[in-house]
Length: 196
Length: 196
DNA sequence: TATATACTTGAGTGATCACTCAAGAAACCC
DNA sequence: GGGTTTCTTGAGTGATCACTCAAGTATATA
Image (cartoon, rainbow over the protein chains, first blue to last red):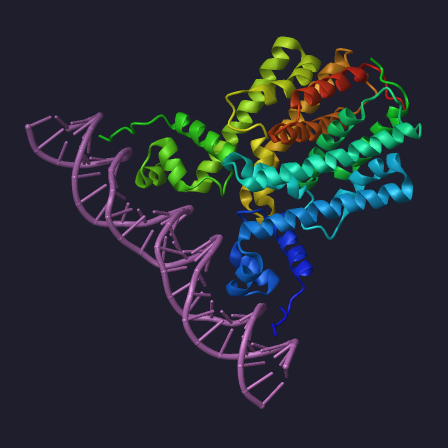
């Protein structure tokens, strides 16, 4: 009986993610979405309910993709190499609508207004941090990283540096690839126990 | 002949800086500014011309204050100690309207639209980076940091890590003070020449 | 005190915001 | 092909956006 929608929902979410990632929450108007998704307001609201609801789907999609990219990197090159290559990979992606992390952009934009999407972004960041921690732990098990480190502390610092790198990569005139290389080199030093 | 304005312009800019710093460019409406500065639209536009013009003044004020705080820290404790204490100082300021750097928030929000204020923020970040570089250089001259490092590279990395720290400090459930301490500890290792 | 010169007021501007909904079109089952 | 159901259309909603301006008010000099 029913009529099928003539769009691919996943594809729409992906396009919305790119728009939101690039321009942010307030910076992406419904006109932008209508143009980017080729949808009239009626269809849009029938499909997603609200701008915020779509933004949440976009965030989820963004976070999922990030974790999947890291997971594949670890599978193909091992945990330490994955952590070392991930920063350069992330800022080197030419197709990405922005260099900075969408989760951090969302957090910085919406945190002050206590917008629920800020906490959603924070939760996705937490998941990512957990994945980093797992990889650090695996690298310790395999002997690539000294066991006297706390993997959660390493992950916390790694994520912070990664967020900084991605902010820096958004700037003009900053050699972000060089910073990424330094982060990778720093991880190599973890094969030895801490100096202090 | 003329009538004096019944406000302190510097005080208004400071209050505007806090509003913009906290809520961002799009997130701060003219109603917010009217309420925060206790000005009617007419006075506001007579005094500042536009929202963007005031934002630029606020950015300038923000950057000036940051450089002044670092300068004082260096004067009182020396270049290396200043660089070590600065991260903790910045995220520990309870009165600040946000933990994250206003320059990076502006950059992330407006860069995608090629808004002139994004480039203004980038220029202020460059100045700050230059100040970091000078302090690293002074620390090398005084022997606190090994002379085989390039002060500009150290500054670039330091600023990137600092930006990351300040994004992390904006999050709930992240011990940013611990990250700041790690950054400070990392600088201590620079008294020795690089490992590789 | 008179007058000139700002500054202050606040209702009002058109534009854009996210969003709605009634009507028409398309795809499914029988 | 008829009937049902969903999707699509696009003009239109009130709210809010940054901003304007004519009128009123306060302060300076003469």
